Amino acid sequence: TRTRVAIIGGGPAGLLLALILHRAGIESVVLERKSRDYVLSRIRAGVLEQGTTDLLRTVGLGARMDREGLVHDGFDIAWRGEMLHVDLRELTGGKTVTVYGQTEVTHDLYDALDEACVPVIHEVEDVTPQDITGSAPFVTYRTRDGEQRLECDFIAGCDGFHGVCRQAIPAASIETFERVYPFAWLGVLTRTPPIQDELIYANHSRGFALCSLRNPQLSRYYIQCDADDDVANWPDERFFDELQARLPSAVAGNLVRGPSIEKSLAPLRSFVAEPMRYGRMFLAGDAAHIVPPTGAKGLNLAVSDIHYLSRALIAHYLDKDDGLLDAYSETALARVWKAERFSWWFTSMIHRFEEHGAFSQRIQEAEFDYLADSEAAQTSLAENYVGLPF
Ligand code: FAD
Ligand code: DHB
Image (cartoon, rainbow, N blue to C red; front, side, top):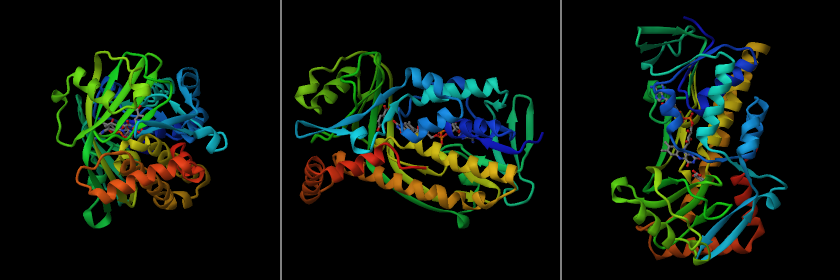
């Protein structure tokens, strides 16, 4: 079979690309390794930037998000037992973020693609991009019915960090940049009311903690733990004891405990691959870059990549202009690196680094003091948190 754009990976990046292309009358096929239920059960990001919600509305995905998503005007940073409120709306001239889980965004994307009859083929195996640098690329894969071949004009590598697309690029044609942090996040989802309406990012000598939520009856909590720790070491009671110990006493007492309905460990990593193009294949989202979760940027970066890539593909097909395609990697990377910088900075200031000496500890404390006293510092944090413009 033949399509215009073969999209490898049915996460937020791949699904959104398929939908935007469809709205512009451009055919694509999405190839996803897992089942739909599996993709929808992965608990991941929860915070959407202003630019992300604007884009989702533009492609017709605003209805449920605007009904059920929670607009957050600010968040708290806890340190030395106190809370610093960061007023996003005030500091950014009216911008906010929206709490609406990645599972909900993915759900809405599937519904829209179903309605538009855009093919998303699940549980495909051995997906392999072929002849990427030639004029007639194609993708081979296997389904229950046997070997398949999908011919296309372009391949979109939206298959996440462990996907095949980036790995199909010869080492000489790609450069990677990486930092692995010496700790992980242990996340718990509970059907309990959140500790407060807004998020709390807490720096504590016992380690970082984050209080987030999905809706008024569903809480999402994270604590910093060792990189080689194991979920089995953390029964619910121990998790909540530790979380509570890391929060200022003024809010700690409001924590409502409940059985975890999901518990998982996420490593922290910064990673960028350059360029985000090889021949007729374009990388987008986690396939090209990873940020530590601290700044809530991973999903939002996938969306901004797709904004640039879809615009470029539309210009190719509708205006016969390849300028944006040729500029895609450079354009996307400029924004990616700024989000990498912010995520690295926020990670560095809010976590406990055991191996750091007394000097780094004092610098971290000075970072907080500066933030607390300086509107300029808070403005910089806020404009990055709500998301830099596309
Ligand atoms: P993905 O969502 O990874 O989608 C890639 C898709 O490709 C997957 O569905 C995968 O099954 C599929 N795939 C992979 N290989 C193949 C193949 N060979 N063939 C076909 N399909 C393939 N971000 C935040 O902002 N906040 C968070 O709290 C947060 N928590 C996270 C927790 C975890 C465990 C992980 C892994 C990520 C987390 N992120 C978080 C990051 C955020 O979820 C990602 O940045 C976002 O999912 C990126 O979307 P994507 O579409 O690029 O990649
Ligand atoms: C969530 C995750 C994050 O990484 C973050 O910075 C804020 C919220 C969450 O899962 O709710």
